[in-house]
Image (cartoon, rainbow, N blue to C red; front, side):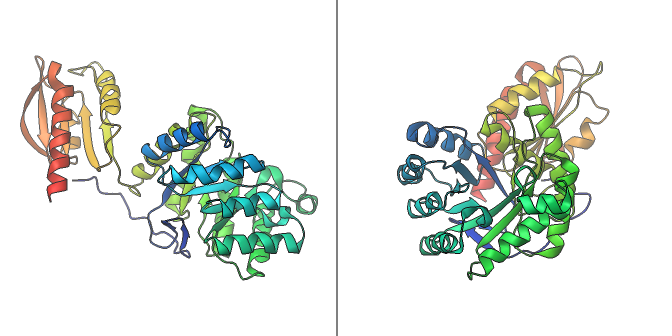
Length: 365
C-alpha cells in the first residue's frame, strides 16, 4: 500500500547514458549521488566512506582527484566498492586520463578548462577507450572570464552559455555520452539556469544547489530547489551538497525523492508533531523507529499518530499504522484495516515485528 500522489510528475525525456552499470536519463529512476570528503589517496578511509554512502542508499559516488596519488588510488578503490565512481577533475587533463584508465566510470570536467584541443582530444579518447561518461559541471562560482565579462555577474543565461559551450566542445569530437549540471549556491539562480537549459538540450541533467550550507539550511535550500525542478519534470540524478557527513546528503536526497513519490526505498514514516492529545510519546517513538528501521531497503509506509483525530485516516493509507488510544492501549492498522491493539510499552517492538513480516510477505510474492 502506498499514498497516491496528488498528481503525476511528467519527466522530460532525456537521452540515456551509462555511469558504470547505472543508467541515467530517459525513463530510468532518478539516482542519488554523494561525494567523499576523505583524501582519495587514503584508500582505506575512502573505501570505508564510499561503502557507508552506498549502504545509506546512494547510487553513484564522486571522489576528488587533485593529484596523481589520488588517480592511482582509484585502481584499488574501484575494486572494493559496489557503486559507480565519478572522478572530480579540475584543470589538469592528465588527471582525467589517469582516472579513466584506473577505473572511473565518469569524469566530472569542464572541457574548456582542460586546455588546448589536443589535450581535450586525449581526454575524450581515454573516456571512449574506457567506457567512461563525462559530466560537464558548470558552477556559478567558476564561470569563464569572458562569460562573466559579458553578463557582468552570474545569471541563468551565463550558466547556460557556459554549458552549451562545453557541450559543443565534446560534440565536435563526436562525444555525446554526457550529462550536465549548472549549479549555484543561490536557489533561484540554480532553478532559472536548469529551466533554461532543459529547454535547450536533451542530455540528462544532474541537479543540485551547490555549497548549500550546514545540515538544516542546506536541507531546506536543496528541498526548495530540487522540489521546484523535479515537479517540473527536470532532473535525472541529484546530489545534495551539505557541510556534513556525506551519508546525511544521501538520506536527504532519498527523502526528497520519496516525498515526491519519485523513489520508493526503505520505510517512509508519516508522523504527527504531537500535542496534548497524544496517547504516547510520538517524537521519541519516531526517533527510535527511524534508527531501528534505517537499514531496510524494501519500500514500506508507516504512520505513527498520537491520537484518533487524524490517526485512522492516515493509517488507512499506509502499510502499518499506529494510532494513539486511551489507557495505554493503541490501535494497530495493517494495510489500512484496524487489526488489534498495542500497549504503549510494546509499540516499538510490535512495529518492528510487523515491518519484518511485511518484508517477508513482499519478498515471498
